[in-house]
Length: 259
Image (cartoon, rainbow, N blue to C red; front, side, top):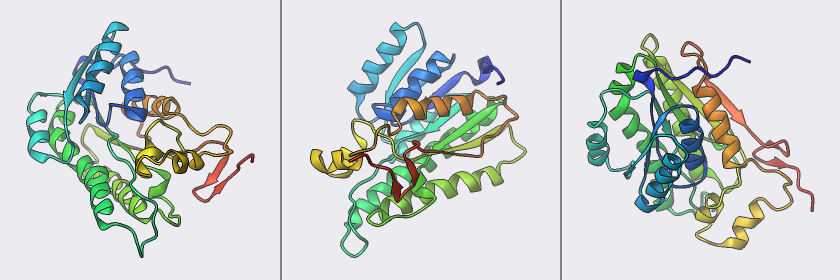
C-alpha cells in the first residue's frame, strides 16, 4: 500500500461540514491526525468548539465555525476567509421519516433535499475557486447506498442522496482537467448516536430496531477512515465512488440479523 502523502502547505486546510457528531466529527479527528488543519462547520456551535479544543489538545490544528449549509449568504461569507482550501468534505445531511410515498410529509422531503443536495451545492460552489487555487484540491461528497438503490419507506431520503450522487458525478465531468478531484463515499448501515434517532423524530425504540440483530454495523470511525484513505491518495488518483457496507449487509434490503 502506498503511504499517505503529507499534504502540501497549499492544500493543508480541510473543511468538514456536519462536524458536530457522527461521521463528520470522526472525519475531522482523522484528517487532523493525518496532518490537515481542519475547519469544523455545523449549526451546533458548542459541539464543534468542544471538538476543536479536543483536536487542538491532541497537538493538531482545528478551528470551529458555526454554519448552516442551507444559508447561501452565510456560506458565501464563510468562503471569503480562504484563498486556498485543500479538501472539502460535504458530510452535512441526514434522513427524516420512513413513511411511504403516499403519506410522507413533503416538508421532510424539502428539508432533506435542502441539506443533502443544496447544502452540498452551496459549499462546493463557494469553495471551488479556493480548492482550484490550492493546485491539488479534493471535493468529497458523503452520499449513501440509498443514493444507489431504493427501498420501501425511503423515497425522500433516496431521492436526496441520489441528487448528491448525481451532483458529484456531474461535477467530476465538468471540472476534468482542473487540479480538483471529486470523490464520492457511499456508506451503508452506519450506527451513530443520532442518525436513526433523528430520522424517527427521537423515538428510541424505532431507532434501535434499525440495528437490531446486526452484529457489527459500520461505525463513524469506519467511514472516517475510508474518507481519510481516499483523500490521502496521491493527487492524480481519484476514487470516483466507494460503496461501504458492513459484512452483514448485502444490499439496502438484505441484512443478516441474529435474532
